[in-house]
Structure formats: C-alpha cells, structure tokens
Image (cartoon, rainbow, N blue to C red; front, side, top):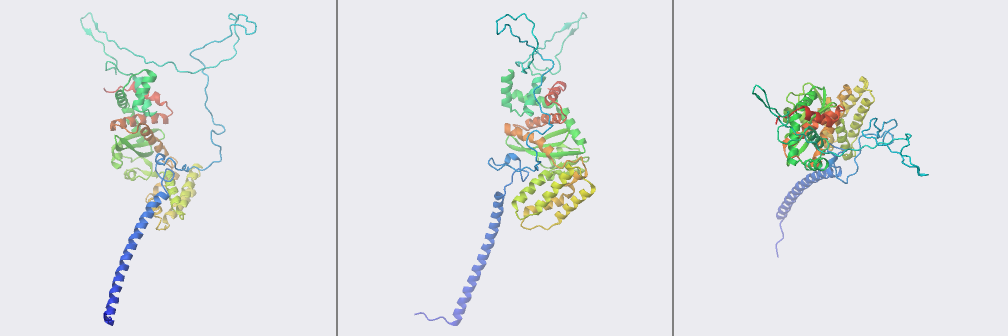
Length: 463
C-alpha cells in the first residue's frame, strides 16, 4: 500500500498540472488563431463564388461568362418604348432601279376565251416587276504580251510589262482586294477563304497563296496605315484599349488608339507602357486619353485622362452584389448616373457640375467598414484618379465612356473566335493594318471594300 502524498507533494503535483494545462491552453489558443485565419481565407475565397464576376459587374468580356449564367443586367435604364423600330424610323426595302440591264416583255399570244391569235396585236402596258440577281461569276484572265520593234536606225526597242505584273501568273487587284476584305472585314479563316474563292469564283488559291496576297495588301496599305496613326495623334481626345491575342500559343496584345473618324490598331508582345512607347513614340502630349484604369495609360505624357464610367458602373454593380450592407457603392453609382444624365440632357451648368464634384469628394472622404476590402480599394482608386472621373462634364468633346475603343478592339476577338489563333506575329499585324483601314473607312461612311480595292489599285507594293 502506497503512502499518502504529503501536502508539499500534492502542491507540486497541482502546480505541474496547472503548468501543463496552461501550455495546453496556449496551444489551443494558437490553434484557434490558425483556424480563424484559415476560416477567413476560405470565406474570402468562397465570396468569389458567391458573387462571381461577369461582364455585368466587372471588366470581364461577355465571352468569359458561363454558358448557363443568367442574362446579364444592362446598364441602360428603361425608356418605356416598345422594342424594335420607333415611329418615324426610316426603314429599308428593295427598290426598283430606273435603268434595268435586261428588259423582258411578256404578253399573251392567244385569247384564253376564244383562242384567237393575238401575237401581232399591240399590247397595252399593265405593270412591271424587277428581279435582282448576280450573274455567273467567272474570273477574267488578261494576258500581257510583249512585242519588240526595231527602228530603221537599227535600235531594238523592247516593250515592258505594266507595273505590278512581275510574275508569269499572278492575281489582279480585284482578287487581292476581295481576299483582304473577306479576311479582315468578314473574318473568313484562311482555309475557308481558299474554299470560298474556289467554289464561288473558280479561283484555285492555296492557303499559302492567300497569305501572300494578305502580306502584299498590308505592304500596299502601309502609307494609309501610317496616315491613320498620324490623324489619331492630331485629334484632341482619343480612346485606347488593349486585348490579348493568341499568336501560335503565346499571348500578345492588340492595342487600339481611336476617335470617331479613325481607328488605329497595332500588335505588340507587351501589355505595359513599353508597348505604348513603341506604337506611339511621339507621345501623347497633345491628347486627352479616354481609357479604363489600366496603369500603363497613366505613365504616358497625356494632357489629361477620362476614366470609362461604364467600367466604373460595372465594378460598382459587383460591389453592391457582394456587400449587402454597403450603401457607399450604391450612392457612388447613383452619382455617376446623375452626372451622365446631366451630360445627356445638356444641363452641365457650373452649379450642377460643382454639386457633382462636391458629392464625389464627400463620398471619397467617408470612412468605410474595414471588412469591405474591395470597396475600400475602389474608394482609394477614386481618390487617386479623382481628377479624371468627371472630365466629361467640363468638356463636351470628351466622351464619358470608352465604348468606341472597345468596339474597335472587339474585332480582334471576333477574328480569334473564328480562327482560334494567328500563326505568326506578321499575320496578326497584317490583320491589324487592314482592319485599321476598314474601320476608318466605315467611320467616314465609305464603302470598305471600295477603299480596299482603291488601295490595291493605286498603291503598288514592292515585290
């Protein structure tokens, strides 16, 4: 039988037990802190799925939305008008031409009642209808033959081929223009373009031959392309945007700089300020730049900037959806919409503009809930770029959004969706050059195919 513990031994045992319990408590506290940190991290990660970003509440393109996602909510407000063409809208329909190419007369040759011969009787005009059709399309081959002539003085005079006729067999300007137009404007991939030319026109053009024609058209368009770039730089207000371009599995970037009369597009492997320096080495010291908040644009020497309000409103939509208790994002969104309405209704008086700017400053001075990290980040960005949010109220030449640039650069995405990728940087730049010419022609109400055909005819390329 063990002897009972003394008081001192019992006290020592209790002290040891207390020490062990304290250590265990400390371990549990550390474990609890670790678990809390992990819970916060997982909660933040889960929030991304509870409030996913899409084209409606962020800068993500519609193509990135999930196929079964709910239809995105438009930033446009309802007008109360019925969908479709409005009253007074001039429609389009087939119209008769005054000088038809072919006239066919139709009249009865006998009486359907008694059988009398009517073939020699003069008819009375009763009406007309026209059928518009395309004649069979066949290629026209022009053969250029050279003949030498010997002068009576004995000198042999040799003939020369016309300018641009450098190969035994080549494709003419119309074929070159049509190939460039179908590729750049109608997004037809090279293989299908080869098939189309064969099926419709009887032209056997290989995919390599189409590549040669497109390269040739790019060289012909070089002077016009540079002229477009210079015209963009001369305009006071220009928009800019960029998008990724898959070139043989590697990501490059298509950049656009444009205004309402000209679109310039160029391809560069970089998305940073280096690309802008390369594309526009003259700088932007005479321009106001309308963009999203991509940092590279603010490294330029532009006179000023205008942030795209459409981007801002989409981001605010996301914040409103994510933070249910947040009112700041709603009020900022309402303020931007109010400013847009003032611009739309031509009510940008000094008092109205000052009221907008004062309300904007008040919102930026508010102290936000520290748990709303995304809202705080957005507020900090608004403070940083506060001078560039409402410039469109101060200058009527400045658009409030960058939609024009997004429309200009979207054509690259459409081309990539159909063709998947460009095989080379040269191929991507060829598309950028021809597309710049076509978009500029459209902006000036010109027939893009006729402009491309004019370039093919009037600007011989160096072979």
